[in-house]
Length: 221
Length: 221
DNA sequence: TCCGAAACTGAAGGATCGTTCATATCTTGG
DNA sequence: CCAAGATATGAACGATCCTTCAGTTTCGGA
Image 1 (cartoon, rainbow over the protein chains, first blue to last red):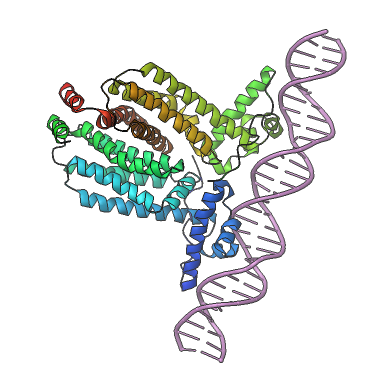
Image 2: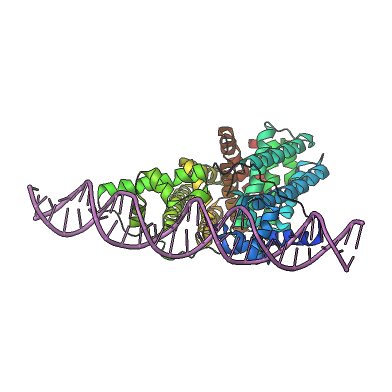
């Protein structure tokens, strides 16, 4: 979808006093609250300001327009998750497929669930304007990281490492997203945490393991 | 998110002449075109009418308000996919886990890709108003269908069939959704079609098969 | 051919929303 | 304590947008 170009989406000015920092934070949490309470269609500058306990003009001192505010929220979330996954990848480098699969699944779940309220809200705005640039960059980054992990895994013989990495990224991102967007219950998340590592592990084994690994798995399990 | 209640979302009147049927169809495709071209935020009654080559008032003869139009599109898509999956389930009843996994994955992909343009567009509006009722009903329906299939599969010993069915539904729905929303390339879809059945199969084997099945799989593959 | 019903038109009303800016208040270095 | 910059205010403006409805055009049976 062709949404407004990501031009001039940067914040207008950076806070220099303490009170402005708390104001910006209040605006951020208010945005997420309004988003979850009223939906994207009713996400209004006035409503956000009212919820944050500030005036409308205050927001326009830090963001040139509404989209810049939303853009900032999305970017912050992206950076947080990318950082978490990068840490996980560094920690998992050289591990076997099972450790990699479990580690990636748990890291992804933890990153998304750390602030599940914000995550759920941000899913809604990511589709509002043209995030294809960011989405594709993030997807490429994730796929690349996974591909490197798979290449360095001992005993793995992937016919097509790129496809396996792509698929694993889609499985991770997609399954967690649909459960969160469906306002998943506590049991749903518990099930996800239990089954997602198993699913990732099973897929990686199927896609890139030799016969020996499968039999090891069967005997060892 | 609390969006407008699904009250009075039904169409206003049903077409009785031939021209009105083509008008409604034109409005539908125009809605999807505008949705893909301009995004949800710019989906306007005027824009849709203009694109469809009709007047704004015409739409209001068949739908009491804009949301009813969007609701109709979402419902039609839901019904189409539910029907396709129900057919697949009927066809797959009693099959082994591999046949079930492959059959479900391919059926889901085919249903979503049959009108991928509409699918992609509808992902955008489903979040706009309160579809939690429909989403949960659809999810429950899908999970139930899968659970029945798993229960009837020969040689399957699931410790927790409900969890396996839930997870498989999340994997199917999520992975296809993220790829479609990312404006996936032709290669991405090809990869999905190649890897998704494999992933589903691997997960089902891991979640519900005995050791013998895994060794069979290793030797046979 | 003719008439009632169905379908279509599009300007106008009413409401909401994003953004601006002149003004007021607060903070802090000197 | 005092400017001067930083921060906050909120009424008002212009731009859309959804929805209505009185009037016009088209269709189909008699």
